[in-house]
Image (cartoon, rainbow, N blue to C red):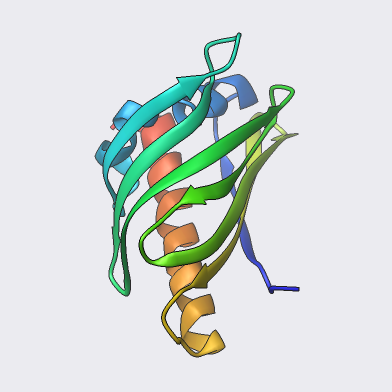
Length: 145
């Protein structure tokens, strides 16, 4: 079983506000850093993304990938790899929990690349992706930028 990397951050906003930003894939290039393009390919009956194509540039990992999304209530979204040029697998999730006047957001990520890569380097890349995404999410939610 692959090891995963996770990290948490507290955002001064209600969980619904945080999830609204997470679900707005068209704006990902504005705040994620690694996502250069995002296109929703399919939605569920509630209008939430089920499949999204992302063009990524995360330094060591550059890719054009399609992810499948699963929404669990209003406080969790997970994704898994559908198609990729560089990755063998990718599983991730955002879990939101109320925390005082804000929301604790936990981002979990497991990536397996097709090219040989030391586990330590892969986990460091995962950590960089997670930390940048959480910092970008916090800034986007709290300041609107």
